[in-house]
Length: 223
Image 1 (spheres, rainbow, N blue to C red):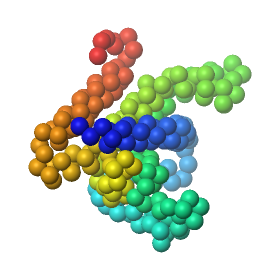
Image 2: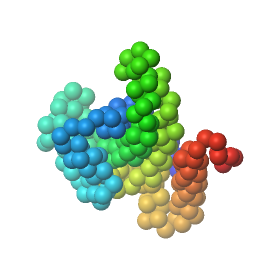
Image 3: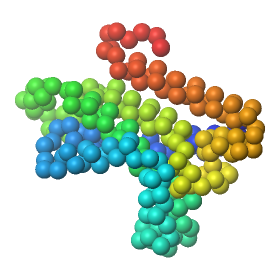
Image 4: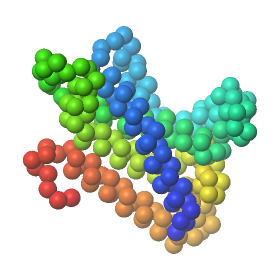
């Protein structure tokens, strides 16, 4: 077991959820309650990482983060290092890749709240912010928690984008999925199997948690 790679994976997954969840709540809420021109296009753009092959998405992100790009050049000028092949670049890429895993469940959770509930809260004198914090967030909480779990688990298992954008720098961008690939290249089936089993257990735990959260609260039992 590559403990350092596991630590990088866990830190990356936690950071991705921390950065993306507030943005996902804002975007999911906006897409759920607002109607505007181009909404279908925005929803399609949100879903692009689900359809585009990871290597293709990784290629475009690598070009965007490169030293010759405006973003990559500005980052290097400020921080003295390239955005590509760094943990910061890997985090940004991970956030982009996980957008649909966060926004879509949260959007569906807010859409499931009856409009009458919002109208009743408004009649009680609650401001839009108070309705959002006191009424909508608690009702949408299972979807928000599901989004966080999905993003965390997906980040742990991501390979294509991680390899394209982060490379394989031990202790910085070498995640557990990259370590598994390395061990297989070295014909170390035992180490690769242990690390793969770790990701499998995490995936099964994620599916169990999301399935349990998707049930009505009165029918939930032990996991």
